[in-house]
Image (cartoon, rainbow, N blue to C red; front, side):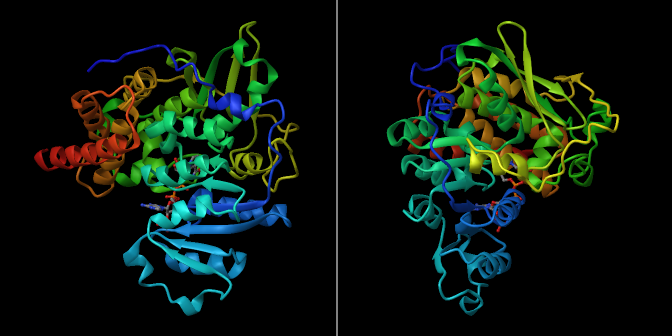
Length: 410
Ligand SMILES: NC(=O)c1ccc[n+]([C@@H]2O[C@H](COP(=O)([O-])OP(=O)(O)OC[C@H]3O[C@@H](n4cnc5c(N)ncnc54)[C@H](OP(=O)(O)O)[C@@H]3O)[C@@H](O)[C@H]2O)c1
């Protein structure tokens, strides 16, 4: 494989769009792509607490169509999408309000993302299934409230180019990147020396390598601080989630991989830190609750009251910081490597990981084999420094097939 480069493209970074001199005012017509998931549900709560004029004007579900019907009844969005055709067959159209238009299939996501009725798209689909709609929202000049980190991991350059053409803005929802986005305003972009992503350490923070090697699906799903979807929960256990976040940060803040550090913080209170050239470190703290970064991504640059619990500064508290252990969590090195090399590496790593996590959840892979499979497929792929969308989609399919082949051979 070739193409290692420390140089980032000279084009404007996503960060420079996010902090332009006059940031676009928040707008209140929200599409939630992935409304039935953990982030989607939290977004609906945020909209409810913000009240009018904030409203959901589009929502999507994949398999949980019964929940989609419930959302339609309570939030009355004019646009609904059911993306999984088999699940959509279970949907009784009589259970939907008459003023809701039901769109079917994966293309419906792009249609909603582009709809003139929509101001902001909350990209809350899990995995590369969220890529095309995130790109469509960026191309249409919407505000993208991005939870779907995989879209940036897979196609950061394409998302960045799309925002450059359309004038849309992108605000991170991931709590770590929201924290950096908030803290980084304390200085000029040129004066950022590094960022420090915090990681809870997941369920295996204190486990030995031998214990981790024998971890079951149930062990890996028992996250100590966050209630999240199954895929990101497994990613937290392998620390692949932090690897994906390193890559996400590279695109969001236009940093070199060696400017992105990871530190383990089991309490999940300090959501991340920014260090400036003078040695000052600015952090964002709050109890772990995704409604805060979601709300901030919607209302930025404004702040408003939030239903999340607040810090209780009268009670004593312990905030621990520990070094990240790349021996027990080899996924981290994959994150730095892919952030450094760019090109096709993100699409390949992400697809290999999605397929390996699926195989682990199905009982077809052991826990340490998730990262082993990712390393193998990343090393085998033919590096492309500047893949177009077609090539990214082809590599996504290829990496999944390679993982399936490898799992069968294991
Ligand atoms: N949860 C968190 O606290 C958190 C924090 C930071 C970042 N994130 C990121 O946010 C994203 C969502 O995470 P999550 O925890 O909310 O996941 P989740 O609970 O599993 O929800 C995933 C959502 O995506 C939909 N979906 C799944 N496969 C799809 C497909 N092929 N096509 C279209 N839609 C599909 C699901 O629909 P159905 O449920 O109807 O099948 C659901 O609405 C991920 O990228 C994750 O990394 C999550």
